[in-house]
Amino acid sequence: MSSRIATPPKRTLGLPIPGRSDSPSTLVPSASAFPPSSLSTSPPIHSMLQQTSAIASNVATLDVAGAEKDREKRLYPQRVIITTYPDQSGIKPVPLQWGAPSPEERGPVVCSRNPTSIKLRNAIGAHSGSYSIYRALAIAIGTLDPMHKPNYTMTEPPVLIPPQPSWSDPKKIVSFDPWGHMAAQAFREQLDAGLDVRPSIAITKAHIKLSELDHATATGALKVDGKIVLESLPLKDEHGNPMAGSPGIELVTSKAAVEPVWHLPGVAERFGISEGLLRRALFEDTGGMYPELITRPDIKVFLPPIGGLTAYIFGPPAYLSDETKELTVRVHDECNGSDVFGSDICTCKPYLVFAIEEAVRCAQRGGVGLVVYFRKEGRALGEVTKYLVYNLRKRGGDRADTYFKSTELIAGVKDMRFQALMPDVLHWLGIKKIHNMVSMSDMKYNAIVESGIPILKRYDIPDHLIPPDSRVEIDAKIAAGYFTSGKKITQEELRSTVGRTWEETEH
Image 1 (cartoon, rainbow, N blue to C red):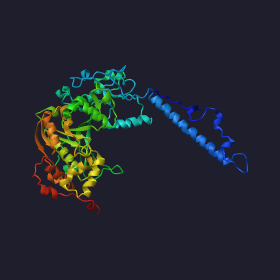
Image 2 (cartoon, rainbow, N blue to C red; image 1 turned 90 degrees about the vertical axis):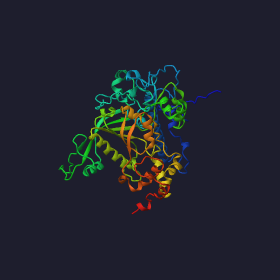
Image 3 (cartoon, rainbow, N blue to C red; image 1 turned 180 degrees about the horizontal axis):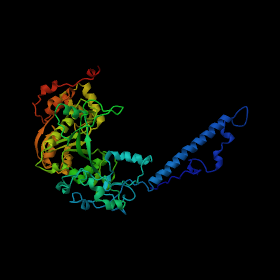
Image 4 (tube, rainbow, N blue to C red; image 1 turned 30 degrees about the vertical axis):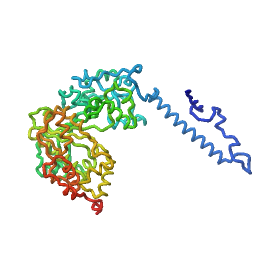
């Protein structure tokens, strides 16, 4: 079969004008181009102005288009490379041994398509998870130089998270890079040589201030100790004068932000499927975004475009790996509506605040508290799906006995958080035993215990902290077998648990 090569459009004034010649005369309208007039053989003045304006507009448009094309060529001078293959000339991935005992032996994670790194890539995808799309947009509109070299001076962690035996076990941590917070220091030589290596974990220290915690202190549920719980500085009015009343409190915390970096063989094994099936599903069901999942079986690392996690530590981080120190843990999945805006249709925010209080109280007893916040909005179904389910629930009577069915009718599944990867962060922190776990989720409990970390005590949110409209959620979960320290829910009781209707909110 022969192929045809399209003839490039001819150019005028350096701009492509399809269908025109390069003769200057073609830019000047002839008399025949104008409609005849009974008063004169010359074209009307207004018609000439319209034609001239149209020509000027066309030239301006083509000028912009030409400039954009030139800019695209400067940004991406090479031909479009849709995918690569292991045996292509020049392809030589930087060696990467997942589960190696040191960062030097493991090797850096390199996924950049920059000219200095594209043939050396040993990972598929892009850094920053879902935010990689915004980075691409910033490059396209010219606000970010794609060759910008980050300056990592003075960005090293202020809190030590030292290597743990789990870091060198290729099966214990498969969903992120355990050396991710050390990348800028461990791979300085490669960075200086021009290799695009980026941290995928950042650790810092901060203060947390929530009005609910102010209330807990006012009622005596939390005590100011001057180390973990601090009294806030007085607030000031618009004139700069201290305001009357208690300024409340704030919590001292260490926190780590972690981006996803998947070791595909380990992730596949964790879910009990083949690596080939995992790759095919990730390729097909993301719209074919990552063809190298199929064409590069030699590359075993994938940076998925999903949210990561944040670990909040209350008390000395070194205590996390010390089995003799009491440890209280809450693994929390994102709920923007409740956690941030206080929606009362679920118990997410009350659970989160209660868990923070429990973590702090544990630290004040001489132990350490940990709250891990995963970006898995709406049980990883997303906020749009969650709101559609809300609509169905409210129009259908919002009964506890149809709670999970409502989600399945829209999403086809009641939960996509799949907690199999969740324990990785606990192993990264060196946790070997959990004394107290604030959760009623059997999925989370089972995932942690099956990963080799025993849980000595688990407890749920106190009944008095449950918002009335979220009783539907709690009773449905208890009836479905979730952990509860209270009484079991019968089917008759389940049918009688009904949430607030929309009409009741219209006062």
